Length: 215
Image (cartoon, rainbow, N blue to C red; front, side):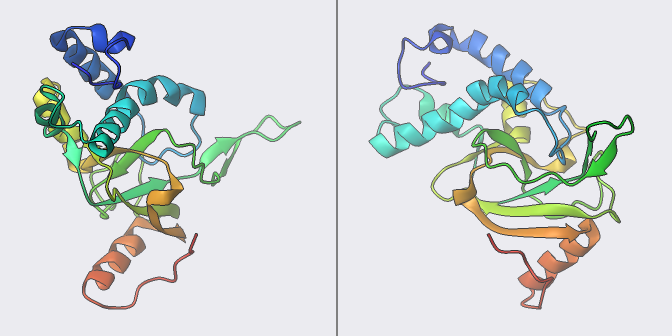
């Protein structure tokens, strides 16, 4: 099936659908082992995952733009097992860095990198519980985005379809989506998950939230 590119000559598209599903399951499982709050990662380590998971999104968008979604046999049905549309939230925490000439690493909040490759997001703005490596009282950077006409990969939905569902990470409501600035609506810096949750709840009730840092 044409999952990874519009061309049938793409190496991954030449695999049988059953093999493509196995490869997706293993890639998805490994990708989900990365901390959702990670910000100081090595971008090179993302390239393989983006080539598999990111290509699902890019192929879907390309087929939609060209009106091919329904004409490519089986693709629309397959996409229905993972598409997510709507608001997304990403949390970025401090990472260890080592200054030149020093041996002791220190924690530093990384700059936001709009590298365009896939990253872990959440459908939920509540990061106060159920997330590994996230501390409710520690300051983080929060990014709010929306999929617009594109679509994210609902990790729970896809993993159920592929037979690799992990109940231990289901509460993270993870969505795999690119780090592209065009989809971002707001960025909030130096606030805790508790403050972020309250701010989002206040906004939904029409109250005043924390001052935002606009892009």
